[in-house]
Structures are given as C-alpha cells and as structure tokens.
Length: 435
Image 1: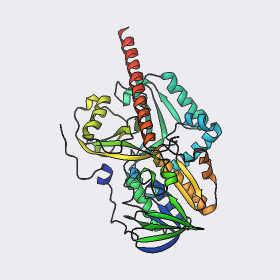
Image 2: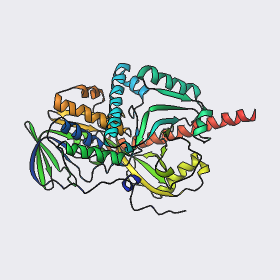
Image 3: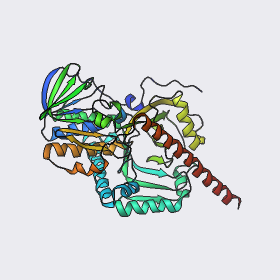
Image 4: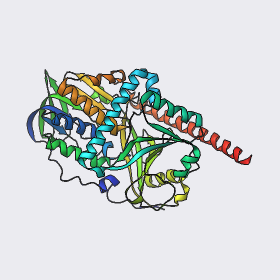
C-alpha cells in the first residue's frame, strides 16, 4: 500500500516551534570565537563560551540543527560509536575509562540542561539492547565488564524476561541501562541555542562559510554577505561540508541512516517506554513516542541519497521483528547523514593555534556533541587541555570514495554475519522445542 507522507519531512519538525529564522550575517564583525556549524556540537560550544563571557558568533549554512542533530533517534547514553571493549583494546583500559567518564559528562550535561530549559524535552528513561541471537554467556560477560570496568549500571534480562516487554521471537537476552534517556533532539537544540543567545552569543542562519583564512593570530571567515574576524575558529560541520576544512573533512566518512514514524497505535508488542536497540551490526533502534507512535530507525549505509519507497522499506524492517503490528501507516520517513571516522571515535582537538574542530560523532552524537562543547569551551576559555585525551584518535584520511566502498563492503559482511548468527539461534531453538 503506497502512503502519502505528511508535509513536514520529519516528525521532529512537525512537533517543534523553530520560530523566525535568524538573519544571515551581513557586514564585517569581530569576536573572540567564530563557530562554523549549527548542529548540537556547534551550539554546545557557543553556549558554553557565551556562558563563560566570551564573544561568540555561530554561523549555520541552513537552519539550526537541520542535519543529523535534528533528525536522529533521540537516544542519550554514555559511550561512543566504538564499543567500550573495543575502545579498551585499542587504547588501553585506563585511557578507555577516562574517555568513558568524559562521555558520561556529556550525558549529564544534557540531563541538567533539560531540567532547566524544559522538562518536557525528555521523552522517557532507560535503554534496552536486545540480542538477535542466543548468547546468555556473552550478554552476562558484557554486563559484568561494563559494571566492573566502567562503572556503568547495566543489568541483564533473560530471553524470557526480554520477551515479556519486547514480544518478538527475534530477540533473546537483553541488557538495560537505567542511566540513559531519550529526548526530542530538535527541540533541545533550539532551546539550547536560545539560551546561548540570551548569554550573548550571536547566531546567523543561512550563512555558509565560503573560506577561512588565517593571518597570524586572527582568522577571517568569509560568508556570502560579510566576514568574521576571530581569534579562534571552531569547525563543527560533520559530513555535511567536508571542503571548508580539508584536513578534517578528508577524515570523515558520510554514513546514512533512516527513520520512520508510524501513526498513533494501540499495540501490545512493545511494552516499555525505554529506548530500544538490537544487536544487528547495522542495527534497528526504536522507541514509543507521542500518542503511541513508533519511531523506528536503521538501515545504515554509505549511500548518501534517500532510497525509493523509504516508508515501505522501514515498515518492512519493523514488521520483520513485530509482525503482529499488522499494516501500520507510516506518517513520516526521512534520512539522516552521520559523520564517521575510520576508528569510530569522535574527532575533537586543535589543528593550529586558534583552530579547533569537533566532528565525526558516529551515530552516538547526543552525549558526545555535548562533551565536545564542554571540552573545547574549557580549552578556549580556560586553557584546559583535557581535550587532548582524544589525541590518540587523531584525524586520518578515510580513503575518499574507496574508503566509502570499503565501509559499505564491511556493512554487507556484517549483515551476512547477522543472518548466519540469527539462523543458527533459530535452529537451536527449534531443536529444543522438538525435544
């Protein structure tokens, strides 16, 4: 059944009040810090610097949070796109623990902001991760490691306990994180930007950065109708503009994911208000939102364009897990473009004196954009050097088109492994049921 998608492209846009557009920059101005990019990383940096008394100008090529910051799943949880165990294996346990603590600081920053700005921005508490293959020992080991090594309050649910709240034969064990929560990311970004303006930040939309020139201790940022002279420039553009700072842009791979939102449903398949993800390597993530709608995300790919019949494809993914939902109407369906580094860690740091960057949050951007804002604002305003903890994950060339092909090939291989693991679990379950 072909369905007509509503006028607003995303459910977030339909349920936010962006207010009047900020005027484009016109003329020449000077400030302490120019932030390029009006997603959550840029807004968080500008917010913190304005709170610290610095003069800040933020420019955004389109509208605030129109990219991944306002189009994501809305999950706020500790950690990075690179899993904690892989992070420890790569950098050592002590480094991994320090970085994980910083990620927690980002989570708690958002939690505090929501209490102050508007408690209705938070849409639910908790996060469940459901296994798509039967692995009780592996799930128990993960929970033990997170509690022991990272102080992360994770708990284990058996397959039977999992299926009491997620009524799907696709799922086995799960683990839950009570410290996580989920939000309306677009409304949060707009509220934080408004508070940054109240603290003195200037924000200009429809103002792309055309060029950045460094002359001694001052950078000049050229825009279509003006320019900004600033002692510090912070690049927060992710995968949407990889040309403005080539040294960082070439280290970022664009990776797309997709989201659909159903009509309001009366259903007995998903019986929790926690956010949910599963362990498919290009996994599903979803949650119950406004009026019983299901927000369903997934289908990670390096293809930048939106596929045809997106709503029907996303519905098919949903029904493959919960066939009892029947044939729900999809009211909204959209794509979001994330930025990934090859090592799956954020790129946060300084290129030269007065030239900073925060990007490549890899689909784990709500807590890590907040974290990067805190780190870079403290570095610029106070000389703090804790941002250097990310030096081990410096920008490196991502391979250009060949890099994208390699990542896409790895996703296909991961999806094949998913199918093999899930098939093996189904055969084991069928054998147990016959005995």
